[in-house]
Length: 303
Image (cartoon, rainbow, N blue to C red):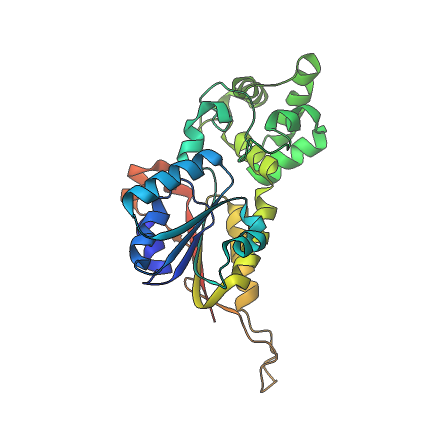
């Protein structure tokens, strides 16, 4: 949703922009074109490969534009922006989910279409539990909760029970082993409809492994604090729970709780909503990039 992002954030000459999910720098490069000369582009990503690729592309396509690319998660926003030594930011972008390069590298373990170790960590260098460790140690109740809440998986109890049964025989260590478990747990008639049967399971495990929902709320609240007056915040989500967090945080900071019979406001809203209903990708973009089908864009402006 590049054009929608540019129209919503409207980055301008001399402004400071922060792409909290740098990835391949597609959005960042286009925003940098708008803020030159005199602007500053900040990028945050916890993936070393993404940072390296983004740096090479940025310096090739927009040479001379000042930039600071930082390794970390946006739930560390306060520390990262202190490190960048900026007093405030004019445009924040959160493009959530997994980037295409991450999905397309089999050994990262994000894809159910390639056989690889079950990792799924956004930052593989961190000493944090992998997806394999989660499914081989979590209780059946916890696995059911993860699959149901983060994946909206109707067959969560059956899949969780099958995981526990299989791992008692042998640890589940690869993506294809997990796919086989999911297929065994879901009725054959249901496997023939609704896309790949393991899609929701993989999504749920990725969210659990990377604590994505907690990180999003922490990062969004930090972005509100750091946004300059008149600045804009844009969130692109691909999951109903992500969209719900963005919606609720924006609503919390934009509402006026003053009772109608009180003539003077006792609460001054911090944000105003740019779009009350989320924007979606147009048919052309969905045709070019099917992953955009579930994208929802929300945005707000700092008062």
